Image (cartoon, rainbow over all chains, first blue to last red; front, side):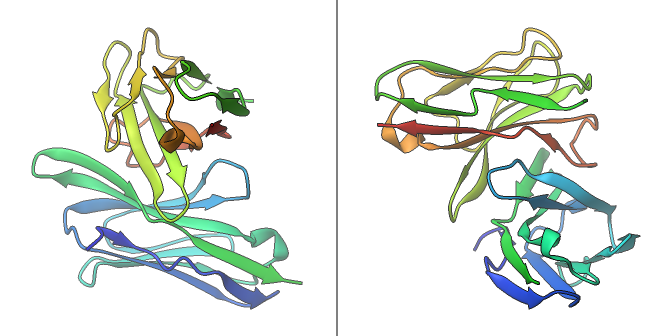
Length: 113
Length: 114
């Protein structure tokens, strides 16, 4: 079993839709949870990070962490064609005395005009 | 503009050749990282450096070496390239000692080994 699971998509939605992107993980030691956006042929760009459980909102983006279920989500409201990209979740923490930072494989999102 | 500069942006390399991928940051971040990104496998850590003068091995270090002579530069060297090293390589940095607040990535180097 992978430590982080993320549906690769592609996920196609119409412009204006609410998008839900998700990751599940298995290591309860993870404390920081990040979402990155990666446009084609570009490097990943940090969108948001959250420490421990709870919600965090930044404009049209909301990140949620449910540590009891080992499940994190990124919601995009009023999605735009410019949101079309691959979204990577990431998480970090100390496990067995070793610091670990791992990425999901990414979900490809297409927002159709 | 603050960030990470990687060079070259792309390269076709003959197998067996030596190649150094360059990475420079101007944010004075202590920690720097090299990742490779392959379809279906995501980002995998090759080597990292928590501070100038120190380096460590990541998940897939074989065939690669790094050095960290100063804060700004973190070159990645392929001593003798093989086709399985065909990939997109990203350099990243972090100001948080454990990267918890996220990484800043460069634009990548697309390497093809033939």
